[in-house]
Image (cartoon, rainbow, N blue to C red; front, side):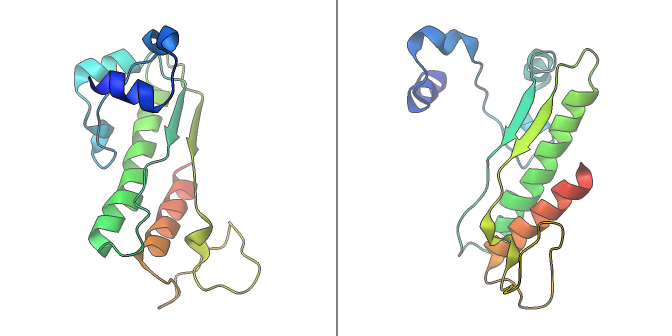
Amino acid sequence: EFKKNMMGMLDIPPQLRSKYELLLGDVTKPRMNLGEKDLALLRPKITHVVHLAASVSFEDPYEDMFRSNVTATQKVLEFAHELQEAPNSRFVNFISTETCYIHGRGVDLCREDRLHFPRDYYNNHYELTKALADLYGRHFM
């Protein structure tokens, strides 16, 4: 039922649905909380990992935002790296989206290679945790 509902939401035509394998996971857990059976199925097939998960609330508590934005990014990057290192890997690329909100209250030219973390620089926990996730991703790669 999950697969059918998701395929419909993603607007994937019925004749193409057999080409997709949808699995429930948790981006805040190691290996996305997938079982070994699912991982064995994925390792030789995955060519790209696309990370789009995040909390976009400006009002959630810091701990929730950190888990959703920073921990999730760490775990998905680690998962992608594990796929890349697997024997006979077909893995090609890790892709993620970012936000324009990682530069806080900066008024000068915003540069992606220069993030700042002074006290009270960010307007909310979303901005701070997205900046931390971006920084982690840069150093991980």
